[in-house]
Image (tube, rainbow, N blue to C red):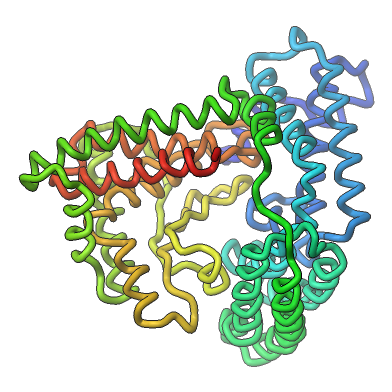
Length: 476
């Protein structure tokens, strides 16, 4: 029997390279070659992404080349693929292929629009994340037997100094944003602790653990040096993080294929703020006898966990309840074999992400296991900071966050993509769609009656109001 992966990867194109050498190349074959080349390039340029996605051609021993020369090579390859796509006649493609072509063209256009912004010269995140996610993905996905897995992780750990060296060479004080550089300091310190102290504990064998510890010390030393460099850079960084109206409007039109420019999107956000505020006044009046929904929300946030583990347990209960609700109401088709664990967020992620997040199943694998990351606090968190994080994850807010991240939000979406979508659509996504789906899932679950108490409704509307306000701020 063919695997889910086999069916999904055969359906969109149905061709293999061996056939191309024995018959005349047609436009549709050219498109298949462009897609194959692009997917292979993604994995070659970012082996950690290949590990995370479960791509069979991944070199699990390497980290990405983040040098300026590698950036230039990637940009040139993007231009080659974009030109090839533009030369293909839509009429020669199937409906599925036309959608995939539009998706890939939009992705490449977005990269070109952002090229002059040079994110790689402004933020340390990609440089620090390469080794951290590279090793984390190995032990999350476990694509190799343990002996080979440890050897691959050790090689990636020993590759961290090169990524830090590229960071030091590439970040420009006149372009780098001080806020992003400050955030990188915490990420680098967390990375050092992860590489030196936590990663070796992933294996039980003494010799393998010692091998990981030795390589981890190399990586940790590099991360510590990165933290020192970033602390200094933060004092000199004078750049900003705002893309600018013209660039953002171009992204909305040419990458996201939306009918709004920045000003139009701002108007949508402002209208939503007004609509949601009125709805929140109605719910507050109905449920709490006052239209002062902000005062009600302040009171509701006092119903919060007292420890990170209590927070995780609360999200776990909500996850089970949301899934059961979908089954009872027959609202979606749950793919066979899907499941989602509710776990503490990775240690190295905690300094840079204070909200819940989600890791999807491997896009090119057979397993449909997702992970709902509960936002545990980073090391060194003060009691006041811990209280704030737990307040942000109050019990009334948990149903909405869970619906967004898991059922029928991100987890259901990505599990369904893996079963039904083309290879390109499983790996090339946009937050405008994935987050839009999760936002729709929240509203649908409210309409279906999942939020049974006025406090849950109000917390749900508060989350929507935050997104609307963010549109106004981000386009301001």
